[in-house]
Length: 200
Image (tube, rainbow, N blue to C red):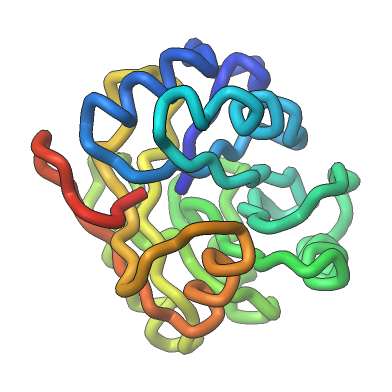
């Protein structure tokens, strides 16, 4: 649910690497969420069928207060708007908005601002080593009553699949992904190296 490719300047993962690594891990699908662009996800979608893996289009949007993961949108979103304006734009395009690593001690995290926003989910499990950060995010998601997402936030292929999201039902397309997040029929998981059904 949170993978960066070389379309993000901070990532070393090629589209090919992302697909092959996910396939080797037994993941049934991945969401490519490059920084402020969907170009990598769209290109990955063009070749995903060759690898028998689903690619969901996402984007990690830079809002003024921090980063927001957008899923199910097909238009590039403007950057450095206020977070609530970004979320409203995502919703107007039929997508869902998830707070990325909200309490990581960096200037790209929303922190307590998330309690003021109309979010659909919170990334409660990120591969960051500090457990307290993930615990704080989970508590916030529970308080807000929104979906809990797990995302590896991979910028190197070795991090792909370290954290994932398990969905209750099969997720064949973008609409199903959006519906599952809205209905909160998903949970963060740490997959084993063997295939795990319906994890992303």
